[in-house]
Image (cartoon, rainbow, N blue to C red; front, side, top):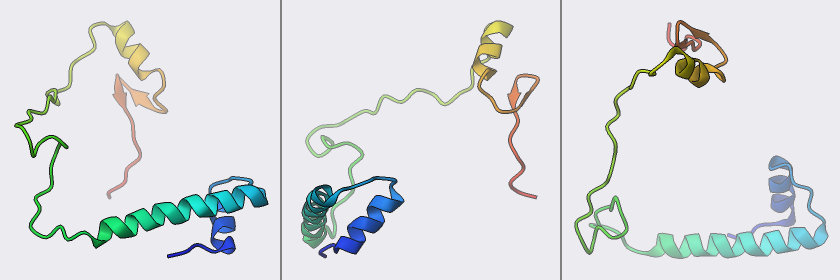
Length: 102
């Protein structure tokens, strides 16, 4: 899939980039190479290949080091206030969010 000059101009506009003619040519060449690589990858038959959680999982057992997803209370009110300082809305140490389900 080759990109046109209009495609590059549209992508530049959508991404807020100002590209002169040389930059547009370079961007078009680079994006064409990237799309060519994607086409090559899509052409590989991956039927029956199990997805890996880690690139080395095919060679050795990998134990993912994940921490427990458990809330921990703030140690002091000052620590809680520091954590909540950037919250757009808070009440009694809790983040307030808009209702999305009625």
